[in-house]
Length: 239
Image 1 (tube, rainbow, N blue to C red):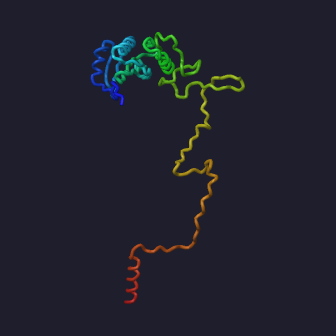
Image 2: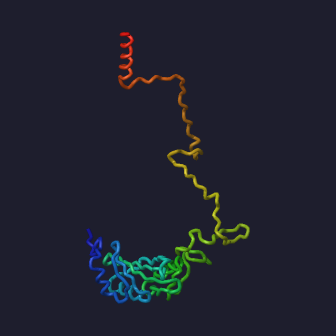
Image 3: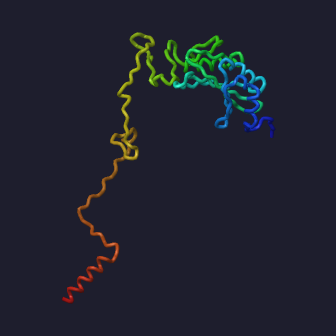
């Protein structure tokens, strides 16, 4: 059995106080929610905060950069950085807020993989990163307009592309929802269907139930009928 120095489960006890003492001058808030430590920092100090967490607190890996859209806020976008400490087996999240026109400083100077992650946030939300030398779309197609993860972006999009056999090229067209593909059968599976499913035609048809015209007199389940009939006969004999 090999014993590792890192625990299987790292507690948050004392971590928040240590981080506040180190980076509170650049932070707007620090809290623990749902078992996770979350730091909200000033936008122009994000690189300084992440560098301090990496070098002084052993959060060596940048696992993810995610975006979130809150249209009701003045700065509607949040950029969330998720860090992992391999030596302490611990994770934290760092957040910054921005709007559509204000760029966030890049952290490609700290982690090379941040270039791809920042491109994804830019593509999906439209957040720009100052200092990223290759800020291009990464998931959507060339010439795509808009940012699909914004709350005000329609789920169907604005345009669709297809290959035109007549023009021998890919063409862009307004989205059209084919109505023949939007019919739904709400029949309950427990009630059965009127149509024959593939494979059911091989099954033997059910045997018809035998028909009978004779009425079967049901026997009484108790002695009430017998007692009443017996009482009637006694009264006839007496008369």
